[in-house]
Length: 460
Image (tube, rainbow, N blue to C red):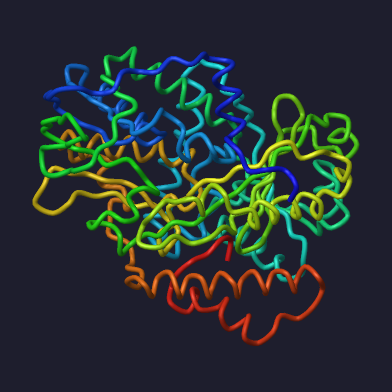
């Protein structure tokens, strides 16, 4: 990896397009009906949803840095709900619960479309591709799961020729097409949500880090908010927060960005704008941009310890190098494409790879996290759920089975040590599979641990 790790290109592009407006930090003491901690996707969707339900509600959003500088401005920009993951949802929530969540997610893309702003929304679906015999099973499982719930149109099998009509690579074996997916420029989406929230009367204070939260009270270093309800919408930064820390951990995810190569994309037939993932457990995820760049990501980054979000999530060169290696292996026709940028960020991962929402017992503090790398779209669902929780409503959103307590992870340091060993085993298994070798028994045994404990990692 020769390109130094830097800031998200998404953030820089959005700043060029929308300007560099920033709100004032909070000073003094104020009152609010709802105080939202976190100004990323979840916090902003929640703020908008509260205002839509009751425009008279006073909503204050506190953002530690600037809206979007966290994971909301660093991700791959895949916008979809749960039809692509209906098998996993069904295993965790049951058929009725999985269908309820998948149908709720059908509102995600229309909600972004309704914003009426240029967020580079491309409704082109998503491809899941197999590159080794071991990955074929993941594709088969997706197809079978959609058929089992009576929605075969949500996971369409593609043979090698049909896949090649959308994108050609000598190592792609076959694929699945998921129609319910779009791509966006995530930092643009944050900026638009921010603008919409301000226009709706939401009070926003950026550069305002919450240092203490209790029932009805949020303190910053030199100010505080008294609020009827508090919403914790900080996602990966909540993995060390006592009420939820046993149920979530954080992983690093890194991407590389190429120079514009529209001519090379035309050569391989990737001109439809589809989002793509492979069948690894620690997936590669890749998509194109408006000017013909390729973003290639690797979800194989380091595991956090004690909920800390530190430089492992922004400056881990080996994971960035794996993303670039994935680019060269998966799309060899792009060998001449220069990588111009690389960056990383944390993702909040639950034991069963589904998000969860709830209320701290005996308080009016509500939370939502555990998106597990798929937060761009489901954060809209999260906003609807958290708005209803914050307003004390009992409705279709609070009755979703994502309002739940997920399985517990081991305590620290077992969570970090065990997670690190499993991660190493999975990486060894997938390296061997991609080289055409049989993985060692030790690697296979280590990689199987999460499944045997009822946990899910990546696509398997």
